[in-house]
Length: 110
Image (cartoon, rainbow, N blue to C red; front, top):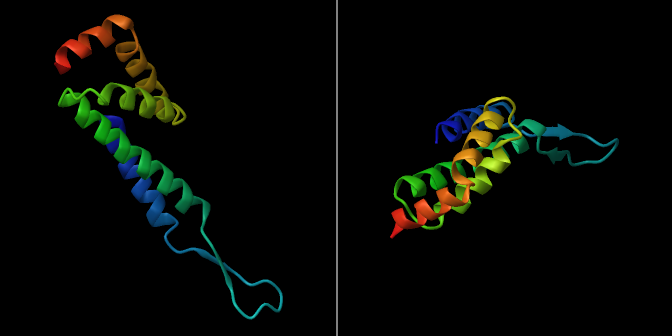
């Protein structure tokens, strides 16, 4: 959840940076073309993943059966955010991936 909170802040800052789309004029075209900026698209992606990661973390804390696979998926996606996402993703895989961890989590959800 800590990584997701960092992702929320990062995503919101990127959304703010890319809030206004760039406007391009193509020659004598009478209407400008609106194109979303790269920071806006990246900020949307990071923000969406952070919200999904927070939901997965909340599910883990509530010991819901769907939370473990969701947390594994979200942390695998977060590994591209070098260095913190990579470190948190490796740690999460190390904790949640072993068969013993799966069996223990299943016992906790019942």
